[in-house]
Image (cartoon, rainbow, N blue to C red; front, top):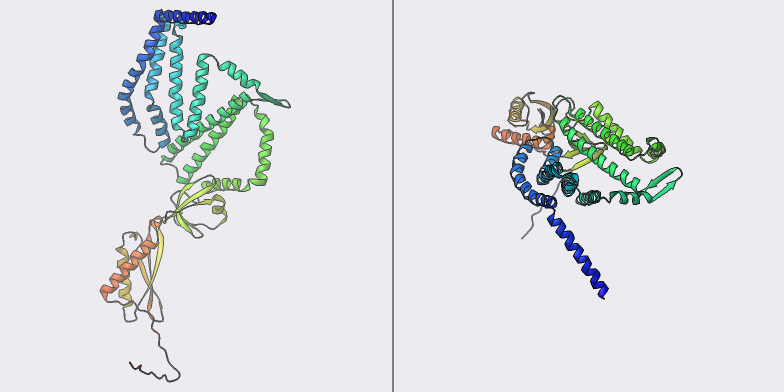
Length: 435
């Protein structure tokens, strides 16, 4: 019992002595003061700089991905300022007392800079779960590196390995490959989106060519990112020839439709048969093209439904493009009037009525023709043109018919309805009912 008390007393005495030495070390106190005072100063500066920088960043138009990245880094400006403050204090203390006396500041500046980048990058990631995993993994690795435990941990991961023939696969290799692939491909997709928005703002390119360039940029960046990740982890690129052969067999057996839709999408973009904004009809689907994807074409109809039509169907089936070479579309409206009406006056009134509808084009004048002598009416066909078929056809046809009804009613022109005459071969006796 007395021995335990003696050991505890000795340990407490040693702890107090170490604490006394630390408090008497002016360089250590200087580092602690810089660490404690720097963060409030960084918060104060960031509170005054962030609104101005964010106002300037909001001027970026037409590129939401780039704006999202800039805002994510800007919202963590205090950590950047704090890391810069610690780095400057570290340099000053290194020049005054040497690098050994500035180790605490070096560790603090590294942790602050790592937290700035990790928190900003995880803010860009849309999935909250993935963002948390990335933040914990990144911060843990930086913390191990700061305290000098990264080498033993990596060595332990490297010892956990299996050997397949001449290939040695370790847990460290798998982690490196996974981190490199995910991070580089994610960055390639983000960079591709930023460059795609820049291409979309170009005024010299057609809409379909813009989509084609954007897709080629994304595909090229993803391929480069994958090859870079494999090379960075030390994997020989010639070793994936077997895998590529297996992928080829898989394409031949199970991915025909995927490859067919992808190639069909490239063909659609190259021949410019359809482009975003065109009004098309495919079978019973009528609407405007919203987007061209690698696998499908997005068509949104007037009732708000969005159809995802595979690219292969756009190649193999008959597609009516209402705005392929011109935005003008002709609409026919058939109607009839009674035989006692003047056909010349009816045609004139119908043409004037069509001209008064806002969506009817004045570039091409409406016409009205007498098409036949019906059983109970004079049959007419009114033809007019519109320049915005994406806004609907039934609505403008209904507006013209309502205008014809009002105009004919005002002019005293009757719209007939069928009459039927029934002839009885034998007499029919009609009797009254007694009440």
